[in-house]
Image (cartoon, rainbow, N blue to C red; front, side):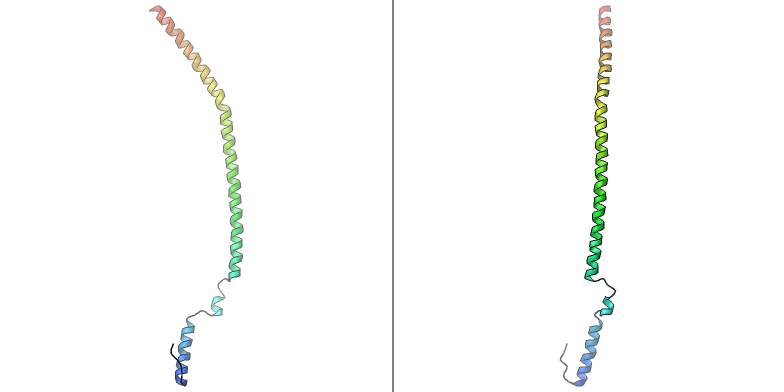
Length: 108
């Protein structure tokens, strides 16, 4: 900006100053935007909502983990008897094959 000395220059300076100031927002323009306090309130609400979501997710994951653990425990309880039954059946088959092989050797 230049210095304003005479009356005509003052009017020009005032016009230039008004034109420069017109570029900036007025209080009325800024009223439609949120204030810092309003933003803090929204932030706090969002934080509360997110914490609730995290807690819900955490409890859901614990429930699923407990369900998977229970299924694994149930499978571990069922497997040894099944393996024992397989072992008994395989042992019986091996015994029969051995008997048949020994009969075959005696005939030859």
